[in-house]
Every structure is written in C-alpha cells, then in structure tokens.
Image (cartoon, rainbow, N blue to C red; front, side, top):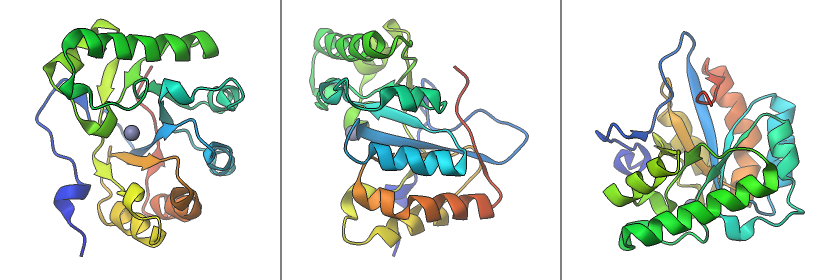
Length: 205
Ligand SMILES: [Zn+2]
C-alpha cells in the first residue's frame, strides 16, 4: 500500500516552493537531487529524447569539471544548490548554514558562469535560519509536492513509478534522484505523465 503521508508533502510555509505557479495547462516539474553523479548522462539523454526540462539540485563536493554540466545548461535545465556535502543544515548555527550555502553557490556559479537561483535543503530538513540564509544569498527554497521515494526502491523500481503516478496533480514538483533505479523507470514515468495530460515545466528564472 502506498503511504500517502510520505509521498505527498504538505506545507503551509509560504516561503518555500512545493508547487509551480498556476498556469493554463496541467504541468508538473521533475527534480533530480544529489548529483552530479554517474547516472547524469543517461538522465540527460532521456530528457533530451522526450524534449523536456528539469531541475538538478547538486552537492558542490561532487562538482567535478568533467561532469557534463554544460550539457545540463544547454538542454535548458536548471542547476540548483543542494549544499556542499549534504549535512542536515537544520542542526547547524546560522553562520555555518550561510557559509555552506554560499560556498556551494559560488562553486556552481564559478564553474558554470550562471547564477544559482534555487536551493533545496538536504533531506528536506530546514529551519528559519536555513530560509534566511538562502534568502540572503538570493535563492528561493524549493521542496517538493510528490516524493518518489526512489532512494528506498533500488530493488523495486516499478514502485517509484506507482508512487508518482498515483499522486499526480497539477503544478506538482516531483522529487527524484540521480540513481540507477530512477533511470530505469524514467522513460516510462515521463510517458505516463504525458499520457495523463501533463506538460513539464520549470519556475521562472
Ligand atoms: Zn539530497
């Protein structure tokens, strides 16, 4: 059985983004966390084949110049900040949170030459200091509406598909990761979302 409370993220916090802004067409947004990693080239190939854009939230410790970051930008995807090394920021004092987010932001920006406008806290854990630090650095904090739970489903990738499809709704931001099991179901996932009448979009930059 699908445990909806783990899949669907509900927040009353107006300073975080879990949904796309209202639009004319039914739209969802795909997000991939914890890269740049080995699965990235395959994910990019699938997104290119399907002609859709997504957002990637990266840890700056993994940001090796050989990762295909240029392809990510050339294909119209967004690169966001996912901290330097995936610490639970909510446990750190404000200054340390600010330093971490600032360092990650600078590393991505100096490599890519593009401004980083979006931030996703590791583990989805944040406090008011986290939001203040992100805001001070000019970044909007993005969580999600639908968690695919893909990180738990190495041996059951079809379940990733079910979690997302069963909870689809207009404007939902969908949490995925740069993982092999996610790559496995990604083409079908995109097909199913399209079949359900949704487009794929990104927030305005
Ligand atoms: Zn993460």
